[in-house]
Image (cartoon, rainbow, N blue to C red; front, side, top):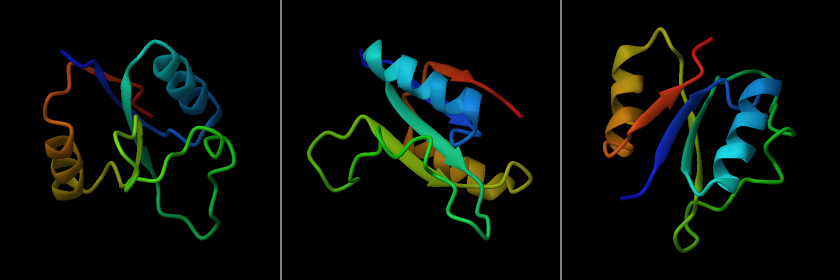
Length: 88
């Protein structure tokens, strides 16, 4: 069974380190990033994978923790999830 993680705040310092660590451990990582005026992804650019490539292990989602419908949609995309972490 695949190990899947969902990380909120994935573009922050701690979230990006956690994503990198979990990818090295073989996890499929889904990260939630806030929509912001600046495109703040430099901390995860080196692990980002094109979602259209075959079998990507890192998925970046835009979301807001106050928007329940958006979080539900993201959660359903990784419904096999076994490990959830890193709330802001």
